Amino acid sequence: MHLKSVGCLLLLIVGVVAKDACAMDDFTLWKQNFRQEALHAGVSTATLNKFLPRMKLLPQVVQADKKQPEFVSTFWEYTDARLTQGRIDQGKMLLKRYPTWLKRISDTYNVPAEYILAFWGLETNYGKITGNTDVLNALTTLAYNPRRRKFFTRELIAFLKILEQERWDSVQGSWAGAFGQFQFMPTTFETYAVDADKNGSRNILTSMPDAFASAANYLHKMGWDPAESWGQEVQLPVHLNWTAVYKNKEKTLAEWQALGILPVAGAWRSDNQTKASLLMPMGKSGPAFLTFPNFKRVMRWNKSELYALSVCFLADILADDWNGIAHPRTEQRLSTAQVYEIQDRLASLGYYQNVPDGLVGSKTHRAIMAFQHDKGVDEDGYPSKELLDLLNTYRKELN
Image (cartoon, rainbow, N blue to C red):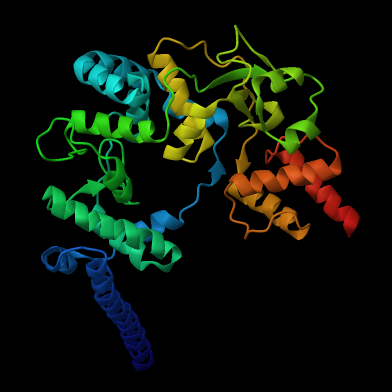
């Protein structure tokens, strides 16, 4: 090897080592500052002395936090992947395996057992997939990372308190710091976890009574109404008054009926004065649902509309109260890059105020609806290829 090449290699090695050393020094400083913050928040010196030396950064957690899917899942893709026959059969079997505890907990918290099982099935496939990442270090990594430092610092402090209270030495969970049968974040555990079997521990890791009761308690505290359905599939009229929908997507059932919206089968599952919201997870080309207040409580658990629908569908299936989706299957898959392009076009026109990221959220839906409203097209708020074509056409006209 030439001397020049050797010299370049040495410089490169020194540079990498120096960069790693700098990062490590910064992490050491961060731990010192975190120690003071944790002490101030009530974490004991003994707990910090035990766990601070164990804290390390996990590069794979940062990568998972940054990772984006190549394509945006459609309603059908998402629900098909979660409402498998195996998951349905397992859920029905588990209803029979834990009849006493499920009935006791359902009666105590006024939450149907089928919903407890549905959340369990979606969160961890009934305990089969609870995560294999060290939760302490996952939370440490995310609290150290600037992106969501405030949120995860709070979660890390809560987790240290849990380790002390429960006398746990280590916990395996998700890369995002959730753990247990129902994947509670530490602050969720602090607020809602229950010691149902009365053994002195709120063990949502391996005690099914504690796990079931904690999930039910969460839904109960959200205001769950056991006499109310989550919602139902509806049929939209050929000529829907989209302006009325755009102004207010929550109306009484009577008001939705006045707009020509009807159940696809059977009678309404609530009374005329129930507040309901119109949900179109694939826009006007897919199925439509009117959702009732309990659906909002499911959304408090997870903000994904597709996740919430999957939980409700699975609960109905387990309760033998399911006729399937009446709307014919249609697929219109968008890539993350195409969603990014839609957001970018909307931003350039003043409709989207955030930095484009290729992820579909409520702000993207609202921006799309505002653009559709101004252009006099159906205001379904759905990012579609048709919408992208319209945005590109409009952009060319402006230029």
